[in-house]
Length: 421
Image 1 (tube, rainbow, N blue to C red):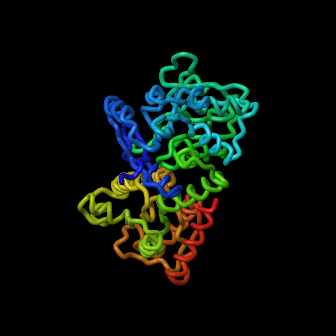
Image 2 (cartoon, rainbow, N blue to C red):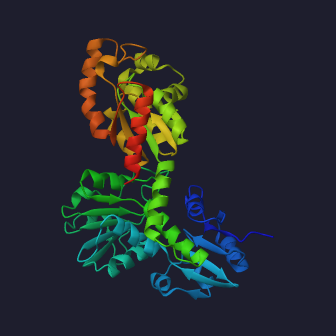
Image 3 (tube, helix red, strand yellow):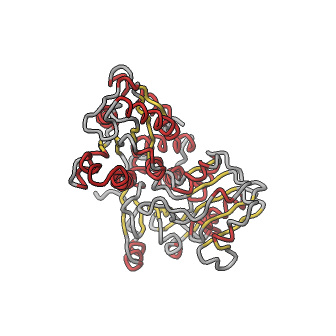
């Protein structure tokens, strides 16, 4: 007997988390069903050969005419992202609304009486607008690249100092175009919170800049999990006892599984040794950035320094940092000087947790093929210069004073603490 089909339709699904999310929530098998053209989407919808599906870009409006019944909230928003087949009749819902409302609530973002700026005019804009309006927002502004209709240009929006909440609904900053950002949060002195529906990377450049401003910043991964939990309630035709607890559980588990762990610290502080042990404990791939630089360039690190100096080496290091930071499920051992370039740290923070491996100066090795630690004096000077950078960049400091096993234990405890919040 053929299993009932559950899954996700959209034009491109290569980096979708939906399968792993749904299969953590319920015991059905969930398929990714890419439909690159409208003709394929039309054929799929006409056949109705599924038990229940989710719908993503660009078909959230396209599927509405195929639904026999559309939930009033989905009708008002003009987008359907969940369809359930009940005895041949298709019922359409919008769980993005509840997902975005959950994201805002989970981070204490209250729209009541606030001036909100929404970036983008696509399908998700309508959902966010509905949540903001229902939440009692005082004024809702929209900004876009073209400024058509009632939308401001992004440059015009930067001259609204009264904006208190910003929500990005565009794909700007999404994998693989990480690091892009439409506006600068520093332009908004009254800013209290920034929400971004992009979920890959976990923290977009917009969110990293918002964090720099000291305001609440939250990405779309929790929204993705939340809308999946609410969709699963429709799929299964039953409510979870505590949907909020289920969302928090799945989000925490997936962050632990998917996020990179980047190790920073002085040369010979134990990053590679601890990194391999941590990768094994966490079931992640181990990446040594210095080894990857050598592999990509074909020369040893001393040879690169001899030929191109430190500046030439840092350029190669930045390229490999950006390359691996885009991916996930890795433990990344970074070179000692990776912290000298703020762009490296932003890349590492976008998709990962950064741990500073803190080994006492007297236990660090002199020489050993490391061009910048050729004498005790050079090592001492370097440690004094870099230590403040390591501390500023780290999500947690891991002492490495006794045995590697003790340091691994300390790192695991620090990660438990980070992922429980």
